[in-house]
Structures are given as C-alpha cells and as structure tokens.
Length: 516
Image (cartoon, rainbow, N blue to C red; front, side, top):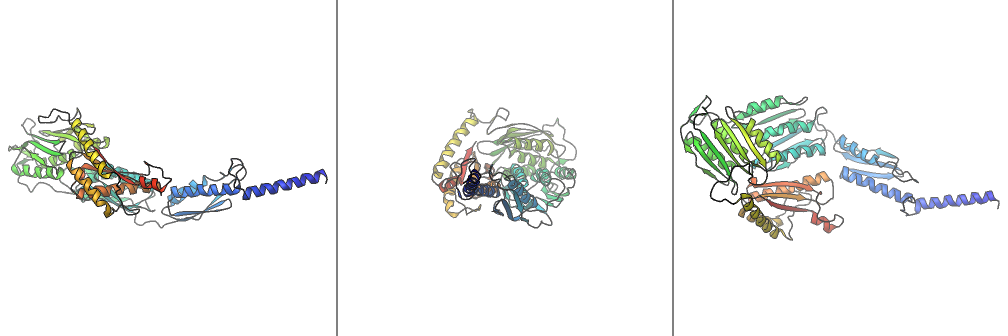
C-alpha cells in the first residue's frame, strides 16, 4: 500500500472514531465533551431557564441544534422575556459542537383583558384586599411591597398577571402614587383603576382630607386621570360648644394622649369642651387602642373650632403607628413625639401630623426609630424608674422561649400550594395564641418560608399569604391585630439543603419572632 493510501485510510479511521465519539460517547471532560453530553447539558440549561422564568406555562423541545418554545404566556412581556433568556444559551456548546444555534418561538399569548381593572379595598382591621390584574410579576411585587408598608395589618393580594395594561405611563407608579391617600380613609374605602382612569372613594371624619385628596388626584401625571369621592362624616350633629374662629393661643386649652408602652393602652389628659366631646373622643380612642383607655380629661367649657374632634381623632390614629409616643395640643398646635418601628412609619406619621390636621390646627413631630422608648420619646410616668427597654427585652425573651417550646418538632401545615390552614394545625396555633395573650405588650412577626420548587416570585407571595393566614387565625383567638405583622421570604432563607425531600420539608415553615 502506497504512502498516500495509508494517509487516506488513517484519515478515514480518525473520522470514524471522531464520529463515534461525538455521537455515542458519554465523555464530559472539558474539551472532549461529546455531542450527546453537550445536547443533554443544553437541554437541562434551557429547561432550568424555563422553570425560573416562566413556571409551568412554557415547555421546550431540542431538535438537533434548534430549541422550540411552546405554551401560552400571560403577557407578551412574559413571553419575550423567556425567549431572550433562552437565546443567551445560543452557541454555548463548546469548541467542537456549537450547541443551540436558533430558538423557535411557538409560544402564544393569552387575550388581553378589556377593560383592565385593578382594585384595592380596606377591609376589616384595616387590612387591604387587592383584586384585578397586574401587567407583570415585577409590577405586581412593586405595588405589593408599598401596600404592605402602608397597611402593616396585612395585604391580601388576589391580583393575577394579564396583558392589557395602558401602553403609556407607568402603571405601578400611578397606583403607588395613590395608595397613601387610600390609607388615610376609613375601612371600606376603595381605590379602583380602570385602564388609565381611577376613582378613590370612602369616608372620613377629617374635614381637611377631601380637599387634600382631590388636590393629590389632580396632580397625577398623564395619561392617568381620576376623581375622588370622599364623604365627610362631620361632627355637625353633635351639640358642641364650638366656634368658627381660631382659638386664642393664650387660652389655657391643653389636651394630651400618651401610649402606655407596656400595655398598649392610651391615657388621655387635659381638657374637654363638653361631656359629649369627651365621650366621642374616648370612643374613638377605644376603637384605635382596644387594650384600653384611661380618660382623665376634665370638662372645661372653653370654645373650640368645629374641627377639634376630627383633629383629636386624626392624632389618635397617628399614635397607633408608633411603638411609644405622646401627643400634646397647646391651643391650635400639636407636638407629637415618640418612637416609630421603621423609617417608613416615621415619615408616614410625620407627614400625617404636618399635613393631615384640619385647619386651624397645625402639627410638628420629634420622632426616632426603634423598638422601645428612646431619649427623644416622652418619659414614662409612674414610679417605676427602671428603663422600659430592659423590662421589655426580658419579657420578649421569655415569651419567645415559650413559643419556641410549643413549636419544637411541630409544623404549621397548609393545604398543598395554598394559604389555607389545615385543621390539624389549629391545636398548635391555639397554644401559640394563649402564650401571646400572656405577653400583650410585645409584638409578633410571623414569617413564611418555602423550598426552592417553582417560581421565586410566586414562592414569596405564597409564603406571605401563609403568614397572613396565621395572623388571621391568631386574631380570631384574641391576639390584637396591631401587635402582629407578616413577612414572606419565599425560598430566600433556607435552613436545610433543598437537594433532598427532607431538606425541602424543613424549609417549608412558619417562624414566629417576638420583638419589643
């Protein structure tokens, strides 16, 4: 055999060996990966992208070097986002075989919603219920985060993702712009967006609010536009010694409301123009502070503006947002000092005191952020000179230890993929409620957690909903709603590996934290 023929034969044998290796070998050594391994790896990567981006709506098939995406997306943005994510895998096959070279988009989109409606309603115990549609998971989460800050008692988000939102303007920003105005109204108030138009309606006993909310509505950025229908429940039906003129600041009218931090009762001192006004404000105080009211105000017939009851009512509502605080009226001027639980709550109270009082009343604040009494807060009254923070810290540790003891080895269970509590968990929650009632001055944070199965955003929403269900059950057992707040962390804080069924089970949990 001539040298040329040897070369050809060797070449053919090499090509045959290379073809066999590429198609039938299972080698996964870097630089020597076969097409079988590369194809399987790319299919796993594409499938992981689908699960993280789209959840259950999409599916893929790998035909040689072409990926076909099918399914029905909720919105065009959701479909396009998935396609872009899969396209990032193109040519990631290694130096021998290029891998995916093309992505075929066979995914469809659900029909757009017409009209496009989103509604928020203040329900019992000042929780917020959201219904309707959101244009994306990101927009839904953005609105939910702000709603949870505005309504710490809880947010029930029943909205779902759908196309059809206005093409112009920022949908989420428009809702976020109006949510603080909804929070200022009584239970039953609603904020409803229909396409680019919205309506906020409700009742208030603060004469200044209807005009303030209407001005806020008029300042929203196009293309959004709306209206406010605020019914004023004035105090005109009361037989009150009032005057339409501003009160002379030299007159000795004073009124004070102070939170008793340990018990969450409120103490009222100072003056009241009449027995009827005294009784009206005391009733409002008991509604805002169900732990109790110690009304020590004295009746002195000093004429007050017609807006006095509304001003006192508004001030009591601001106090409920604080961990510790005191409000003091001298004539027409309010000074509110105290400790807010968060920076957001501090700004909320500050804005409420400075802009929410009905004229002629004006307000100022001195607020800090913390969990108990701080130097900037009003000093505690009574004979106990020991710092409140020390007492409450010890109480929190005791209460936490008791809750940890009854929860040890037990799990608060829910229906599969649902926020519905299983009846088997009622006995455990009854024990937790009993402990919470024995430490009424302390607050509870109920945190929900999931494993890493499914979509991260959906997991956060599910965990938040489950924590809210626990709070609803404890509230029915007598634990004050104002003491509890919920958090949903989803899969972000695992305590075990998600690689085993046992680890996943440990990560699906509810945690209850006692704080001062």
